[in-house]
Amino acid sequence: MRIRLNQAERWHVFTHLAAMERAGLPVERCYASMPLPRRAEKGRAALLRGLRNGRDLVSAARASGLFRVEELRLLRAGVETGDLSSIYRRLSERLGARVAMARAIRARLMLPGLVFLLAMLIQPLPALVRGDVTPFDVIVVVLRNLLLVAVAWGGVRALISGVLRPVEGGRSRVLDHLLLRVPLFGPLHAKCNARDFSESLGDLLMAGVPMFEALPIARATLSNAVVHARAVTLEHAVRQGEPFASACRGLSLPAFGPMCELAHAGEHAGRLAESLLDHARLAQTGIAHTTGELAVWFPRLIYAALVVWLASGLLGGVGMPPPPH
Image 1 (tube, rainbow, N blue to C red):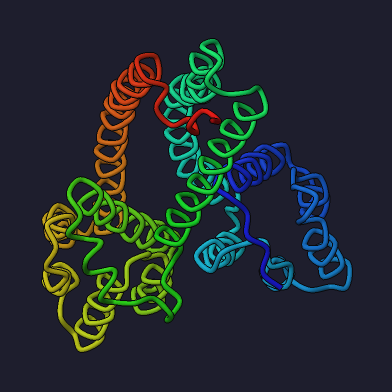
Image 2 (spheres, rainbow, N blue to C red):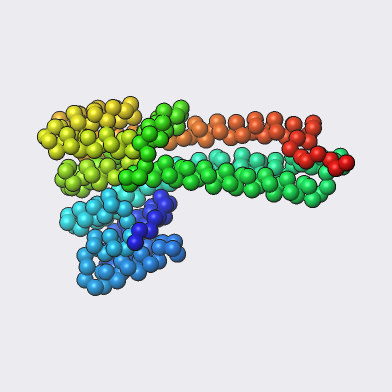
């Protein structure tokens, strides 16, 4: 059973667990009170049932289907070291930064979205005032426009969800190769993969997970088949004895260049995990800046398109059916 929690839901879970762990509450009580959506209640019940039946925390969490592979391995490391609080805190901070960025983008796009909906309602009105169409025609046009927007929005959300979903063996490498070449979005997508890989690997190494065990878990977070295939090559090179910093250059993507440079310095200084986490923070800052710029310019493009559309409607009633003869 696998229950997919979005970033905001996972952030609430780990923030709650960090607070409960700091307060010294028992493990079962921490997980019994964690905030979950209704669809995840079966997972909570399975987790609590496992704990009451004497299973260890990691086994019960795995059976619940609520947690990802890298999160389960970090939980195991926290249990082994007796420091679950720091694991919860790191996961909460990581997810919190991404949730804050997503909320900021949505807030900036809210107003142009509302303006767009209002424009769809206003655009047919001139033709109605002129008597070219009936109120029924206006209602049909408005409903048609709303349906088209709903379908388009659903398609965009499905596309983004599919692109950001970790590779599980069924993704087309050809399509993902083309995706990396898309202007603006391709480099941003590659940078997100670099951030996810270095962040997961750095967290796992920091928690004491061996490199050979941490690499496949970090690789599972990648959401591009091309990058995933190159990460497999990196893993094979490391298993054959090549230093990580040297092996990661085989990724051959500009987005991974800074990670390789920091990993080279960190490996020589004996601070590879810290260097990878430093790169993840720098990459997150760059991603937030890029998405912030896009969130500034995208509404301006929407406003310009709306001005043209409304002007055409006011001048000629474009988009309305022809008047009845």
